[in-house]
Image (tube, rainbow, N blue to C red; front, side, top):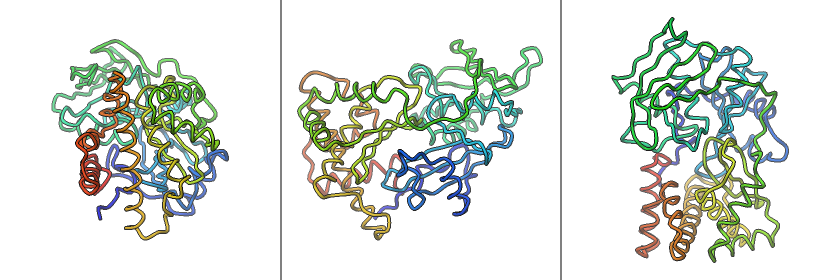
Amino acid sequence: MPTHVKSDKLNCMSSNWKQVKPDDAFQFLDAVRETDHSVLFEPSLCDVFLHPLDFFDGYDLLRISNTYAPPFVIMDYVSNGENHYYLDGSDHALQTLCTQGSVRLTEDNVLDYIDLYFSYVYERGNSIVFIRNPQNTNFKGSDGMGNHFKAIQKHTSVRVNWSDEDDAFVIHAPLLYQDKTREGVIHVAKNGRIDLIAPLKVSFLDAPRGVESIPIAHPKADDILRQMRDLLVKVPTGERLLKIADEKDVEIHVIGSPNYQAIATNKPTIYLFMPEAQFNADMHQALQLGGALRDMEQILGGYPRPSKDEDPQIFFAINYDKNLNLLMEICKIVEEFEEINIPEAVAAMRRIGIEDIYGGYKNKAEPDEMHQIYIKMMTKQGFIL
């Protein structure tokens, strides 16, 4: 049985992650817990990790890894032990630290700083990606920083120097913009402002406003759910699953996050994760909702997610079976969209990264073969060792 990666590539920026001691982890979870979504902060399900950030004075990166079911849900915060700011896919946390004057930049850490920004903040349709390795362009969100930083180290063309004339750190580095690698020039001021000079001119953190707290709930949840429903109801499988959810009064929540994910708990309750700064749903989120709705259907039918206390082989075997089942349901939905000439579903399926599953589905692969396709796909994506 393959081993599941415990915390979705715990190597962002570097391998300098340390697991927080149980008592300290409990205190942190208690401090950030939101009553309406308490299952996401349940201490028996959550591990907490810390990564030091030397460019924020007194603040570290704190990661909650919820091990309810693989792939595990990750929620990241910047915290000084007293103030905890959730990284929700917007720049609210980073604006707040800039406003507080907590930014401490040097030539040695400024690359880490912009790496964190472009990894965690959803900007302009995700069109700008910092130091994306041309041979591995799949990383964005909380698992992206380490891969970006490793790519930085490999690019001999990356240059960083302080410019008195520009009153900023001047960085020359390759950027991925509109799906093409281009020579980028970035100016970073000591107060945290980021000015992209090339391949286009745009500024980030140039007019920061502080916040007291950052809730995890997405502010546009109602609109996003309506948009996803409007897409799914166009095909028979999506319509059927939505009808079940409505009849059983299943709660569906949208959570702000730099990561795209959907899970169904055994209540059942569905959680969808997407950037807080993204105000519109697209086919990508609709397909993920479709998969979570299929998991909901199985749970209601008496096939729940296993307890974490189960033997690991049983725990992962059941979870992998259920994950494959919901992915097959997504494939069925994609096929139905193809039949009514809506090609966006195929593009979204590829964006999710399940082309191999879809190929097996279209070729009517036997169950054992589909299981092997799933294991290979998850291994290739780094979720399984």
